Length: 365
Length: 231
Image (cartoon, helix red, strand yellow):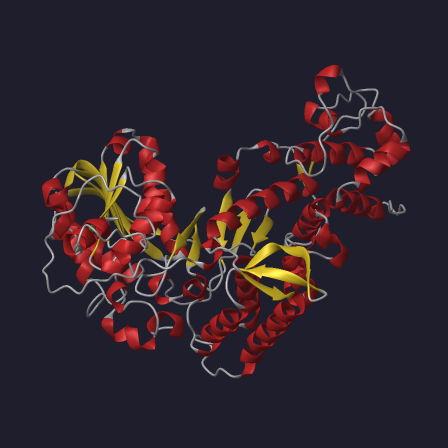
């Protein structure tokens, strides 16, 4: 959404941005044009995920089934080819993904019309594209979520594409943590929240839905792709009135809100740099390292967030950060209890569903 | 639905987790049934078919939130750091109801959140099937949730019982539990239970056969007493 304004600042007003996916969505606060002119313009609008495309393709049923057989064979063939067990594909999971790909790309009903004496099926992508997509998934290890262009996260379906981190199931819990705090005290419902490094906008939208119309969420991201994708997702959930996406690094776009935030949440990059080359192929080869690489011990962004939280949160304000696990969470808690002594209260580690100390939460005194 | 159905029919590996019979794909009602059946076949407690006899609270009547509080919630993720390190491979969840040890799982949805909701629904059905509350047959007075699932011709139904709730309605579950309590207290006898419920033996049999989980629970109860299964 913010992109609209940026576009209009660069392009002539006579050239409407009809191709932009959510150009009709109003942004409440026009952003300041702070980025330098050297920033390359990204005119490509967010991609439309498969399930939202119009079913403008058709193919004979037998051809569709032939594709499914091929795709299934390819999925089953991976079993013996991989050597590293941690990083290998799993046929059973691939077949489940294939079922989801089918759901997303093939419309529910077979047209009754006969096509050359055979039933025809309406598709949201051409058969050629479906062959290509599945090949990319298995041969190139392209994440399934990028293949279909979306991820099911909590009760939402979020659009994702290359350049934006795919929201993880663990992170769903941050929204639950916010919900708990908001339920305990209505004060949190009416204030301004911030989600830093929002990526697809997942946490911001989850929090926005928890606040239920009274509060405001400002989500920031330094990546223009993330800003565009998050804006699109916010528009899909019709929350553009309460969630604002700002382009910029961490707290930079929030200067006027110093000491005013009632809540601060983030899933910052936290993987130690040395671990990046060994990541699962889907992650290391395809997801943006900007959203993963947290510096030498993975805590660069986390410490920056801790310092910022002391400045940005109002008294009583709540924060929740995701970390790499037990060790990092402990480092953060220690830092807050020593270097940032007497600034926060109730600083604690919260485990994810796998029992890993995944989150650090607390309150500004 | 239709293409997905064809897909399932051709992909038995996936179909196995979704439905036990290929005929059911074309009928949403039956599909719903097969989900229930699946919840019993694939997702029953690892402790086997042990029936828990409860003298405590009726867990089936708990709210989702309260029931969840009694559960240990786990994901199946392989060992490793998780989080940003992994592309989600599996959003499967596992709920263990601590007071009874009953386990419910859900794997088929794309979101962990939704799998959690399905697992909770399954847990409720499993609790209804496996937890037996004691019933005093001599002074039996059927609870309203049981009256609601009885067919209209039952003589113990009153005008306040409302229209009959069918097996696809979530409200069927507490009624089913109360029904199983009665049959259990009658030592698996359909004729004796039917008498208590103001029904003919045939009408009660039809009600039992309308829900796969209910049928299986009654039949295992009867098998334990050396009685023939209902068909």
